[in-house]
Length: 121
Image (cartoon, rainbow, N blue to C red; front, side):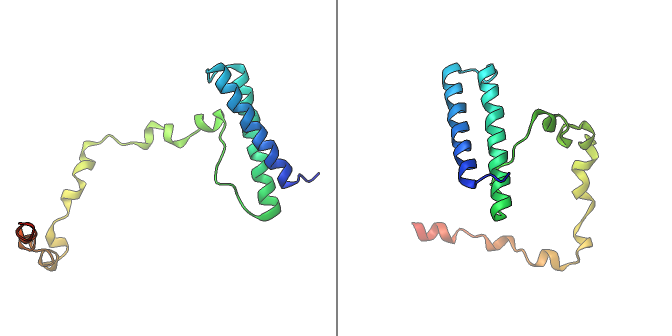
C-alpha cells in the first residue's frame, strides 16, 4: 500500500495540532494525553519522512529518537572522557624549534600599532 505524500503531510499536520492541543490543555509533559500525542506525532513524522524519501528521494530535515536511543547514546559513557590533567599541557610539548625559524618571522608584534586610534582623533 503506497501512501500519497499529501495524505502523509495532512496526517502530520493533524498530529501537530493534536500535540499542541494536548500540551495547551494539560500543561504537563508527562500527562498521558501528551505522551500519546507525542507518539502519534513521531509516528506521523516518520511516515511523512519515509513517503518523501520513497517518492522523491528527499529526506525531511529532522530525526526522531525514542527513549531507547537516548539510553544507548555513546555520549553517556564516562569512559569517553579522560580526566588526565596531563592532556591539558600537551600543546607545551611543541616549541618553535619543531617548526623552524620561519614560524616567528611571519608575526611581528610591532605591526599592531595605535595608528588607527590616531586617525579617530
